Length: 281
Image (cartoon, rainbow, N blue to C red; front, side, top):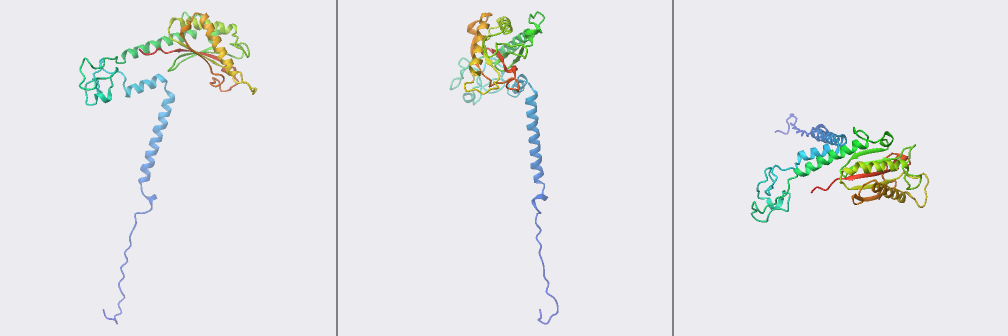
């Protein structure tokens, strides 16, 4: 180009366009949607756990992890039909002492129970608990429980067994104030419980509970008092016909396990008699 040329130089400008700021992308929306879905599933799970009973939850758990095999005799395998697999020695799902270490045969495999008998025993026990509840609450056709006694009784079935709760009201005490001496009402209640529960052989656990004291003292008597009342209840149950070898434990819980929200409510003065579940044989 000549130095005397009047033509202006050509300038080429290259503009590099970026991908935009992060907030203009859509990746965060996917992550947020996943988070909201997970939270919804979590709250649904919490709601279902609160809305179902222990028996219903056990049924759901058994559905996804069945505890009853199809065959009453286990072959040592982990399949539905209890066959042999290469993992026989590691898994050992059979209900026995386990297969032999190498090439187990039919005669040497475990011959334990399948769990069917256990399920039948649990169902029978649940039915027995239901019948005892009906009698204690005065719902049975031949129940001799009066209305005055029934209003002091609450029953519930738990994993441990059937809990029979005997509690005080504002106008009716179970024990003399501040002592372990039972009233006539408590004697009648315990005699009735001993009579109704005599038809079963389940062991029993007795727990004493008392309300909190409004006065703070150096030597709080709630521990000794709750245990003394539980032991007095044991003696009355035995005198009412319950065999002494059925009593598994007698415990004083003081004011540590309240039944009413108000720790000083008389509703917290109670005796809990638990018919323990039988051990699965």
